Length: 75
Image (cartoon, rainbow, N blue to C red; front, top):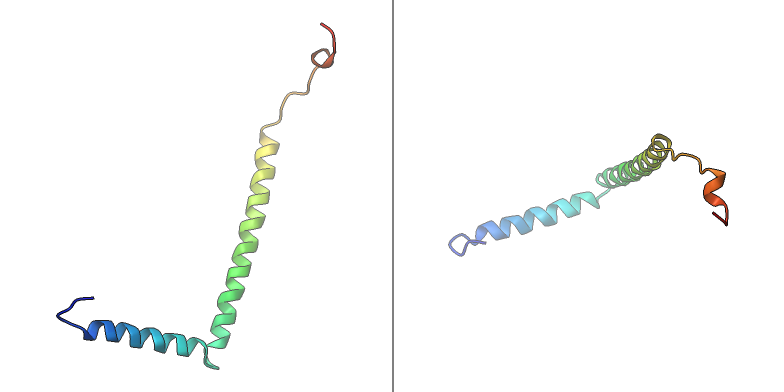
C-alpha cells in the first residue's frame, strides 16, 4: 500500500467485502454451489486420469517372465 494514496487500500477492502457479501447472498449461493461442483468433477477427472495413467504405464512396461532356473534354490 502506497502511503501517498491511502484510498487505494480502502478500495481494495471495500471490493473484497462486497465480493464476499455477494457470494453469500441468495444470488451468490448457486455460484458457490456451482464452483464446488466443478471442483468435485475436476477432482474426479484427476483421479480417473491418474489411475488410467498408472494402468497404461504398467501395461506398456511388461517385465519378462522369470525363468524357472532363476528361482531354483541351488545352482
